[in-house]
Image (cartoon, rainbow, N blue to C red; front, side):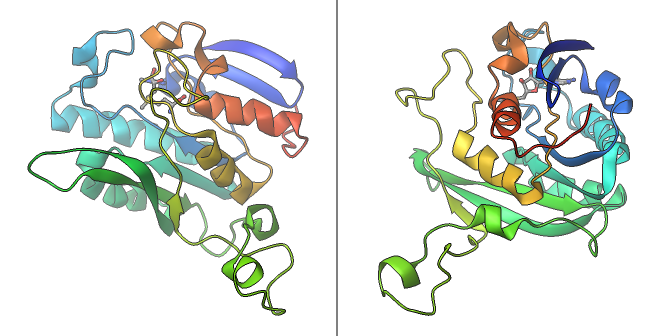
Length: 243
Ligand SMILES: C[S@@+](CC[C@H](N)C(=O)[O-])C[C@H]1O[C@@H](n2cnc3c(N)ncnc32)[C@H](O)[C@@H]1O
């Protein structure tokens, strides 16, 4: 495990194997995980390391979920960007780890991937699970977006700060020519998506790191989307994780 940077006392970037650094953390209110999808991407250890037999992949998943749950505060949440080919396994595993589902969010990616013998792939699941379903944080005022009542209907009943968004999030995925695209990071997530997830908890602590030796993580978390949002959260003063 390596502390990559400590820009302010509120922002730390750790790199390494999650099974190594998760046990060293505690008091995490929001943990956003975008784990390897087991589709053969080379993160530095070769593409076969991301193409494990199902049982092995799920066993590893179970291990880090257990470690992740132990880091959470009593009002903490685990968000999982669901690896698409295994979605049916993960809800069960998260329940078995003692978490309760708050929401399944559908990320509508707008700019989808064309497939010849199936519908084009234009959405993904994001699972939001809480440690305690009666005691989790929901910073609704940090999440508000302009509503149709405000913009379209000029309805006086509209909340002046906008509405709480629905659980279908329409956010373009990061394509090759997008301004925020980081060259060589094929699994980059849009900042808008991470920012919204982070706003749920307010005092967020992001934790899915990147292995130091991994290919596109050469200068690691500093370039990863999740890490960027963590730093960004610290900079705008909304993260309050004492150090
Ligand atoms: C699907 S990608 C997510 C990247 C993320 N969306 C971002 O932009 O930062 C999966 C990430 O998990 C990292 N990874 C793979 N195995 C890991 C492990 N055992 N511990 C920590 N990170 C790991 C990979 O290096 C890769 O960065």
